[in-house]
Length: 597
Image (tube, rainbow, N blue to C red; front, side, top):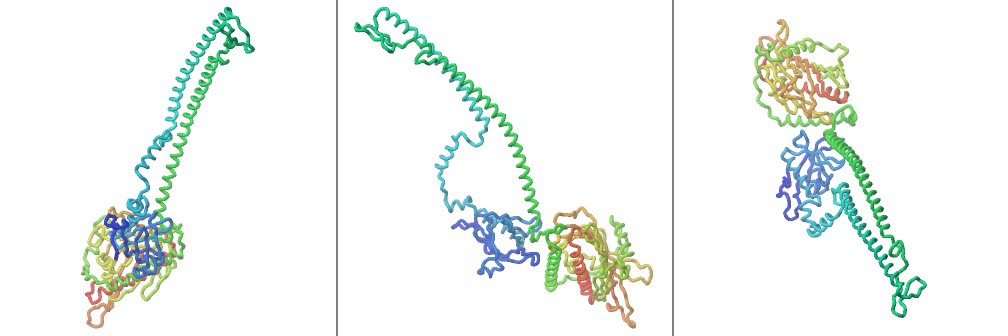
């Protein structure tokens, strides 16, 4: 993958002049649709925007799509080490890098652009400046802190303050009451004394009455009465003691009511606190459910995306499913043709000569199971099925015939398949050897992504784990099986030389099922008989005189759901191609070589 610049999220990836992350461009594989699959596109990361073009040469014609990364979610794929997804709301781009290192580079660069896109980022503040001063911020903080409505103050704290104020008010009322009592006593004493003075003056000086009841001094300088008539209510008609008693009673009532309100508020707070706790618990449960649903939603494949899963409730209809599978198989065929033309064949390994190891049962822990499987195949697999009404002839090409018997269990297609073929110039031993030998497996088997031998049980029995290439929209499959090759001893001198390879599913602790693949179950056998026609005269037997009769049977449980019509159509298409490809490979490898019976 060519790239314009590299980015790893460090300070070196930021332009020192502008403070912006550097531009990144390169070739990534982008998922287009279920027909065309993955396509190489020129992708550019610049100014917080991810854009793609059909190719680097077509940049001048404008991009074919772009995503703003401000709210983008970047998700590395769980199993594919080269893939990552970029999603913004309902728009999802599925991208694949050349290798895991380039994927990490792209993810870090996108995250860097995304981080630098926000106003609150360090470089953003450096570019736009801050309108807040430390003084204004401190002033705002100070004014807020002095408020009586600070965040976090509970109602109980406010009620405690009110109780304090109540105590202070009670003390003030007591003080005022004492003052009012003193004033009332002083006024009473003063009135009594002035009344006595007036009475004494009336006896010594004549007075003249005035309409208002007051008295003046006479012409001789004697005093007149200037005080108002005696009033039982005190000065200016106010009963200070009565008023003080009333004030005390009023304030006592207010304080009693306030205490009652405080008590009610405390009870109400307890009630509201319980309600709040219940609401918080409900909110927590809703948030957990939301996160769980969001997680499940992320696990589910986006409609039309490369992870769209198979299943009986699939939104993709049967016709689209078939079109997608057929398109994927066509692409695999083209890739295989290119690989075959460029492939340099490995040197042919010498074939093992027949020995007792290939005809004995063996002593490993699966020996009895192998023997039972071999006997069943020898009893039933080589029987002719042409006249059996349960078997349908689905393909006939020259010497090759493919039969199928339709079987479904719980909606899953379990059709047994049987194929017969005759190949000139090869022996049964040679055909079975190349079918069993894992050293040459990838030379002729094009559906396998990878495989390895889990355990070697004996010279002629091994346990193999293999994953098959995914054919979208079907899920990827893997298989764990025991593979054994056997030479079947002839029962009489007229029986042809017979070899058999059987592959059947087993369990093994070193290869447990995973979430990445759907585990398929198989029971497959290839039975090969060598037919020899006598040569003319004293000539030695050559490859022109030999022919291999092949009986191939396959019982496969795909382990998952897919439309029955699709599975049967794929089997009808792929089994003949597999037999022709494999037998042609054997003829190519054995041409001009010594015949091995």
